[in-house]
Image 1: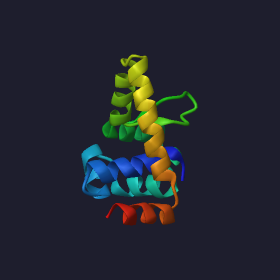
Image 2: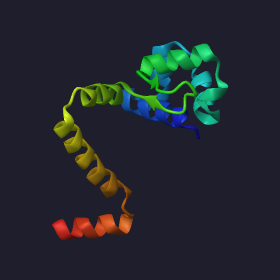
Image 3: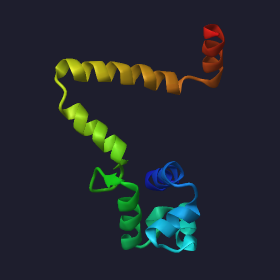
Image 4: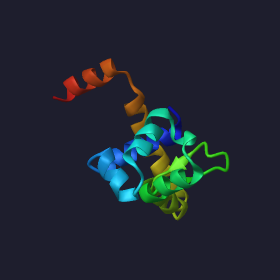
Length: 117
């Protein structure tokens, strides 16, 4: 599944109680939304994709549409840009530690959890 479809699926789950409620909110037939989520957003009409993304607060970062941002991610980037060098270093350090924590194996996570209990 492509990045945009995964992001749309995640944002619908986060912002709406169901795909049906989202379809009603954007005034797009449920069958169209389900098809887009199943087959990939890229197969939908440009207008439908833009309407879905705008409603969910998803913004394209690159012209080739390889990366997309939610409103939260866009806000974080805007705040990061306002930081001084010390603040950027701090955020980068915390980000690296959290990334490594999330990428560790399930076995290592279980071991670490057992050690902290």
